[in-house]
Image 1 (tube, rainbow, N blue to C red):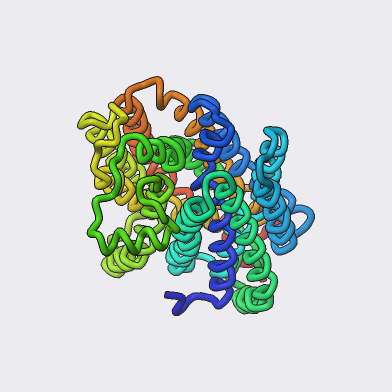
Image 2: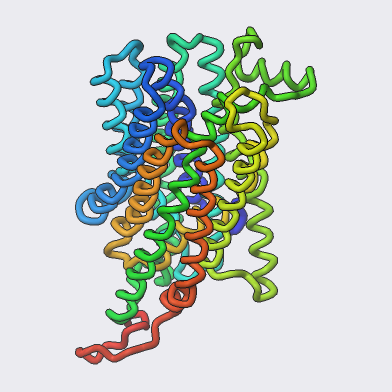
Length: 465
């Protein structure tokens, strides 16, 4: 999988894997914990869920700025890993007050921004300018994200079912803290390997780490505007996609019957999840394992598919891949419209698990077309001196989408589920249409700049001598 890619990619892969294990372990139990421990209604849990995710993904703007201007990327990442681990440790304290719970959420949300965008920048810095491997590198990196996301709900469900609901949730938050410790250790021990890879690329003089790509002010402006357009459009995607931690989890808990698995496979599943009494078992968290599991299965195939198209000159431009992802996400939620119309609206645990699993599968394909491609596009387009800040902009767009995910989620019990998923489907298709509308402009901004004489006689668009 890593063949042909810089050695430093492995370091970033496993560092991000453990960091994502932490956040997704928390998210697997976050909504359920608020409802079961604090006994908050869906309206309140939805609002807190949205605000937390918004802060979590908006804080990378600050993290990117600190890395660009003051601390540099490695130091900012390590500080973020330590602080995030402290936030999870606060959440792991049993029977917390609301104030302590809010403090833990705030620490996690803000410190995550020091880590998240900056490690994504380091991935891009491993590759030469215009490298055809960069998209594939981000796909592999994204696979690391989802190894952690795959393990997280398994760990969260195991701890909850084996320890019990009174302390099982707090144990899950403790597991998230342990994940951040492993992430810090991995990054710190692998830093020399990453530095060697980055230095090798810089020595070629063809990476933005060695010399910033010289483009005219107009081209630079076009690229920043293109990024802003993409960021505004993907808000609708993230608003819909991140219902996997809220609306889809509630659909699993209230509308979906237990998984009808063969007895042998069910027994294995119960052992993995620590379920001793099947009558009292909760499988709602476990549904979140399907998205990362499908990503692990499909990423190599998607990378091979793009490579196959590339060899034939048919590979879509990065913005076009993003548009395809948005269209697929709409199809994924259209499945939930039919599931709701077929009985899901009644919340009587009558629906087949295949409805949710099918929706997760299509949404996974959507995510593979959009999220790693968005990171790659931001890395290609952002001027080097603003790279951390503008990569943070991608996560800021995610943050706004996440806030609206929580805001919209507060209507889950007010509207029928059919109406709820129809709104999500329309939003995804609308965002796909917007990408198509701006596609020509987005592709033009990514094209190499034409050499232009500046006022000093220096040629823009060429490497300095």
